Image 1: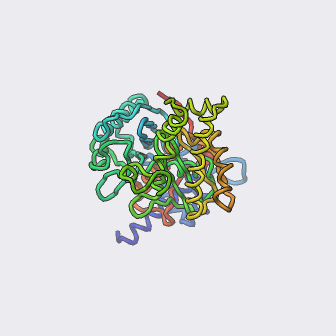
Image 2: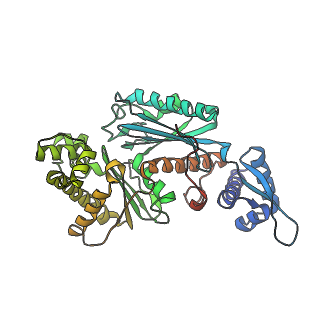
Image 3: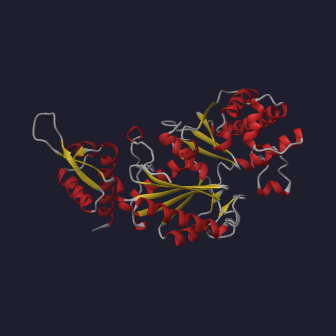
Length: 405
């Protein structure tokens, strides 16, 4: 078979599979109408997909004149995806099927030793999740790991991730593939979050979208024209390194980032300590602000002003239709209201700001989306012509768990 015919066959397979994913249960006649392929081609492809157990017969059409037709749908458990949200303090791992139903979740505190210890920890969580689900680990076809920082596809390192030791000096991608025994994709965690919100959350149908996560660190994810913006070295959206807040020329700003030094959790705690003389947690600062503590309110005001400046920088460059706030701190409504109040004072055009709809699961949803796209590409051996991923329609997906651990 010539290369041209082989590619044509692969794209035909993709077209048939996408029709089933988007509209199943669906008959071969309906697939023909949607794809423009011949009935013979569709029959051959569907038969092969059935033999490979990617699709299955679901019944027959009814309720209209003429012979009934066999309908087909995706087999959701034909493969599983390990979706991982790796943070500086917590790891969240979920196993999802091809319909994005969560079957088991594992949560653990991130090993503070970093490096290979974290790699081995995630591999152990994946094996544990497979045991809980009662499946062989081989059925997990891919792991998508969202981590703070910028994955370097050339060296496998993760740069700009000061909260996880040694990831900037080791081949993290190779270490994960060796430990997990499957294909592994590394992605920035906030990039995954903006993909998740765009698919199933607050940003559905929005092609120009920004996500800002505020917690242990601060990061951003950006979609322009419906496409994720990664930049030349996957470092687009590293908001912590915006050159304001702390002095960007201080050595510490090259490690943590000048903006992160004033807008993330450690900065909030330190700001309150400097004003009140007390060292308390961030949740307690929010509680004290609600109770009328002047120092706590001023600390949150200061943080919100910095965040408004960060959003202004994003808006001036990318002009997103909506900015979604997430992360353990960024989700707090008291902070979001303050940001909304301060933003008009430093940016001349309205910017819509909303809390994440998916909350702490935004990156997990995004990881599932990336995993689905890569499984389809591996199955058909060809990327979608327009570069977009084949995802079930949002209205058909219930990203719910059936077995949380």
